[in-house]
Each structure stands twice: as C-alpha cells, then as structure tokens.
Image (cartoon, rainbow, N blue to C red; front, side):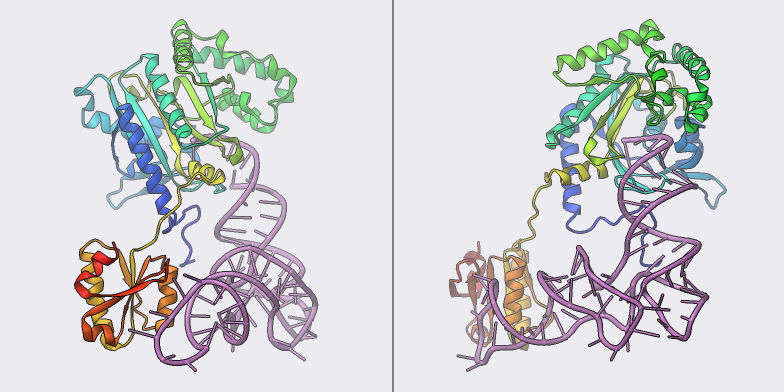
Length: 416
RNA sequence: GCGGCUCUGGUGAAGUGGUUAACACGUCGGAUUGUGGCUCCGAUAUGCGUGGGUUCGAUUCCCACGAGUCGCCCCA
C-alpha cells in the first residue's frame, strides 16, 4: 500500500522522462508554427465549472470526477479536461479584449475516476488546443489540421481521421427526436445499454458495438436530413478546407462526442492498433460553451490529445528517440589521498561544463574501471600515487585503449 | 461501476500439497603486481501480490481484498 502509487497513476521514471520532454517540445514547436500560445490553468477548479461546462448527465460529470470539499467548504474538482478551464480563464482575464480570435494550447494532467486499462489512467496527460472567438469553418479545419499534422509528423502511420457534424441547438433536437422515435419502434431489438441510451443520449445508440450491425440500424435516420442550413453549410465548408489541404478523412455519421458542449463539427483521430482505447485525439466546435459559462455568445473550436496514448503508439512503432546518457569522463581513483585529488578534478571539469562522474563507493580500481566502461564515458581519468606526486592524470581513451599521462591543467583539453 | 484472465527475486520466467524455489539476464565480488569491455569462478527470493481459511503441512487448494491486463460503459 505505502509503496504503491494510487490506482491508475504512474511514475514517469528517468529513461521515460526524455520521451515526454521530446514530445512536449514537438508540441510547443508545432503550436508556435500555427500561432497558438501556451496557457496554464489550475489543476483544480470549482466543481460547478465542470458541471455547467461539460454537462450534468454526462459520464464524466456523473461518475468520473475527483471532487472533494476543501477546508473552506468549497466543492473543488480536479480537472477532468481542460476546455472548461481555458474558457474560464479566457473570460476571467478578458483575453477576448486583445484579439478577435484567441488561440491557445495547453499541456497538463487531467483526472478521471475510471477503471484503468492500457491507455487509460486516472491521472493522464493531455495536450489540447482551443481557438476562441471565430465561427469561420476554416478555423475548424485549422484545428483538425493541427492535430492531424502533429500526429503525422511524429511518424505515426495507420491514423484514421473521422469527422462528423452534431448539429446545433436549432437542429440537433429535431434529429434527436427523430432518432428517439425511430429506435422506440425497434426497442425490442435494442441491447440493454441502448435502452438506457434511448432516454439519455439516443445519438450514442448509433455507435453501439452490440446493435451497430443490426439491420434496423441502416435505416436509422441520418443527421444530414435534419441539419439546418447553417450547420450544413458549415460542415460542407470544413470538408472543403480539409480536402484543399489534402487530408484524408472519413465522414462518420455515427461519430458522437460525449460532452454536452459540442456543436457542429466533431472529429476524432484513431490509432486502431491501440485496441479499445484507440482514440488518440478528439475535439470539435463548442459554440455554446462560453455563453453557458457566463460570457458573451462566442464561437470556439478545439481538441485534446492523450499523451499516454500517443506515447504508446510511438513505442509500438519504435519511433521514440534513442537516449544518450553518456558522459565525457569517468574518474578512477585508487587510495584515500586520491579521492580528494579526484574530487577536486571532478569539480573542475564540471565547472567547465564537462560531464564527469566518479565512484563514491570506494571500490577497487578494477571495479572502478568496470564502472567507467559501463557509464559509457569516452575517457577514464586514472589517478594513483604517481599522478598525485607529479600533478598529472592518466587519460585513457576507453574506445581505443590508448592512454597518456598529462599535467592536471591539460586534462580538459585532452578529453575534448 | 460490470465481466474475463493474471500476480513467483531487480528483470524474463520454470516449478511442486511436504525436506536446499530451476534456468537466463542483471547486479555485486573475484581470477597475484594500479586499468574496463571477452572468458571463467563465486554471491545474490527464510520467499512465491496482501490478509484470512482448509490441512499434520501450502508458493501450490478455497475465500476476500489489492494491483495489473483485456473487454463493457465512457473517453484522450
């Protein structure tokens, strides 16, 4: 217990951190190219922000939030996603005052109380992007492109981009109603989960793995038939932009987003090799959220990508960069007096920004040489009585086995 | 929250109701004189996820819990 991290959390260990840093660098570089600026919001927020933003009745809010009461009796929740927080920060700090379109990105950990499995943790990391203040479908396309190009640039293959439109408050209710009516007629054929969905979220029935292949599913009403003119035009424009950019996408009328705030464009990028948790990035437009949270009616688009899942995919394809733990020099000292002499040399080298190490365990010289070899150091700097007496150091090139004795002051020159 | 499977040392793992829990890798030490990578030798789990129970006896059987894993729900 004491020696176990809480369920669903993971240590990111030396040897793994490098991959994270590498990935985060890629993200920051790319976002700069697209003109997005980094924002960091608090890890926790008032519970109400998520209740309002994400929506009561969604799984995330109903059963996955880490909520607690703080010592001031406030209900606090560890962020389960970051869009609501970004919107809150946008409003609170009046970021809209500086520009019509505000483009932000974030990297950070999110928390969801869910059953862990591969690619799904209770504390996990997301990279996300939000474009606030513009309704032009070109922005939807820009966001999708950013996500897509990012994953592509990492070298991932077999990625699938699916897009859909989920309508808006004007037309979605009509579609919902049609769906509910249609499935009610077939209620006997629905699985247990879907009967529940009939009430809560009939859109999800379309996505059901059990009922998905059944015959009546094919004749289920399609959202295209219900879209209002605005939504239809918007969707067509997004497709037009994506096509212009040469991106391969698939319109999937069954693609539904789980969070309430989505309107119009919804998209998801999948990496099927990951198994059940194959969605590597997902997002869409959320024109209603900002008003919901108390701002002016402001359109916005965004997405979030799961870093653990991306890392998993990269690992699968062996796309992670090799690490270099090697140091320049390893000091080998024999004798008590040599230790002090060696320590001084160690410090001097480091002051010159030369990576150096020595053994502190008072091992035999042979063992120290082994350690030197294992450290990957190019040079062993050998110090014994002779060297101390003559103020020199024996520099041995561990790759060629050649060695020379040089004056102490010239060691750094010798090993560069 | 629901279901299946799994759980032996630092790692990969073999194994059995009963006296010393294979093997490999790793780690540490050694193979005369101050020098590594190869080779050789030696050491390295009083312990088999945790807690109960069955039994003369359990790592091996049973139960609970925990963790992992795969799927469902949902999502990144």
